Length: 102
Image 1 (cartoon, one colour):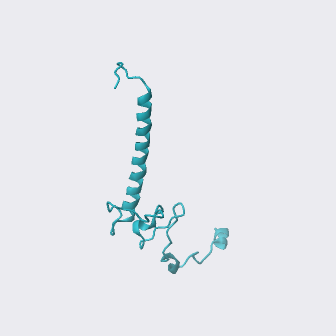
Image 2 (cartoon, helix red, strand yellow):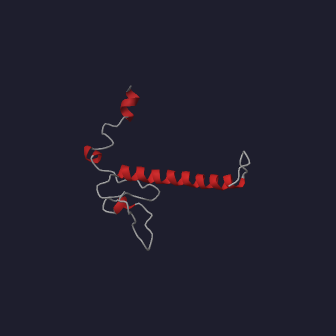
Image 3 (tube, one colour):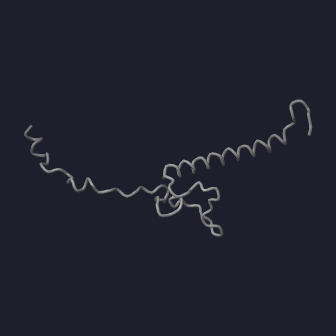
């Protein structure tokens, strides 16, 4: 026990003031949410139109989690649409099972 008491520091490594410091948000792929911008400043605004939201999905008052959920849903629906397009093209090239044309 004597060895442990000599190597154990008597002062804590942090002070209570250091615990109250708010951490800055961690960037996600280089994006840091900014509440002052529409849609929390997500990248994707293009030059001629700028921020384009005709249906109002990114209206004021929407939370950051709702923005992330809408963005994830948009990506998933886009992937399903791309698979459906490939399925349509494959279906056009394969013969029908009963020889029906048209």
